[in-house]
Image (cartoon, rainbow, N blue to C red; front, side, top):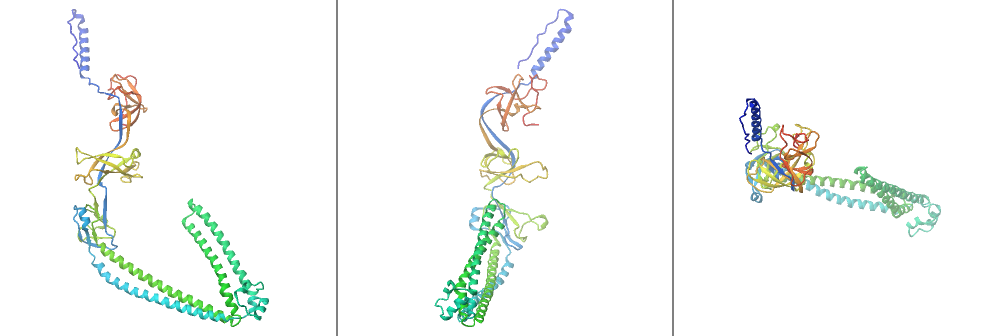
Length: 527
């Protein structure tokens, strides 16, 4: 900047003194303005790649963490526990290092009683098995005796087979009694019985067909989620029931043809009524006694299984009183809830079932948890790369990758600002470093997109007026309207209004400096 040195001339006449003074003051003022005015910095519009990033601050935590808790369904005291702050190594895992040991004396006292109960139920189960075998043999013997009595029963032959057939068979007993059922002269009760059983079969088949059609319709409705699974299972059960009814009806007909009619026909030659009652009684008693024996067997078998299960579970609980290392990590005690009033974790502390005792984060693999505003969450995808800066490790950067992002807004701190919706994003850190510890503050920059060839200018060079229009300024103060695109923390893409190589101001004209047609505004995106 050159200094302004106005030339001074002594006036020839006194009348010009005031004019010369005024000119001198003006020249000095102009010189002062030129000397003190700051130089305007400029920027040449360039074209090139532009990285679009999301920058957030979060805290470090272990990427993998194991919770150690009591799996024993009893309140137990801690006899031994690993010291807080110690490190569980891979070697400790291989050797099965004891992390927590509980007092199992009360459980061991109960073990002897459970073993005694198991032996008692085992003996009862064996006895019930033998009793069922004996009862089955008795039932078979009783039924055979009743069937033998029926063989000789012949009574009311005319009522059984009709007058015509009865006259013929009484003259000459048939060689095949079953063949009488297919004789055209068959009548009486036998003919009616056959008609009834055939009707039952037809009726059962009709019901089965209807049930199958209904099941098909229900399955289509179930596939469209118009009916519940319970309704589908009910219709399936109904089809199975009708199938059994058909099979039962057909079996009843076969039984009648092969046994009942033969039995009834033979009873007509002897004491039909008494023989039939003996068979019914024998069959009923057999079913009843078999049912009782089977029920007793099932009961004792169930008791034996329960005793076995209780003993196995009790032994497992005793084994669970010793918790061994299964994963490497850093030992952190989990303090009990305040309402429990148990004090810190230590030897002698009572632990309730499922209570967390130790958190075991693996410090060999760290992650950063950040919360991203809903306006930016769609720009973040899994597997995107990230750069991490740790406040406690100045001068170094770490690399990472987006491992997981929340699908619903985080509820943490929602009560402070119900309108603020942020999503948790987990970034895995690639490097391993002893300086990385849970709880440290970290700044994460995630590369969400790279624009390969775009015009770009510094963000501070773009101004937004009250109407939302965007402007830049030439070195002479001329405003240029532009259409902006995506941005990062430093540069913003220019989609329209500038060309590569043009020179613009880094800042808008100062107040009082002449501009040419644009209203001074604010940087885009700032209030």
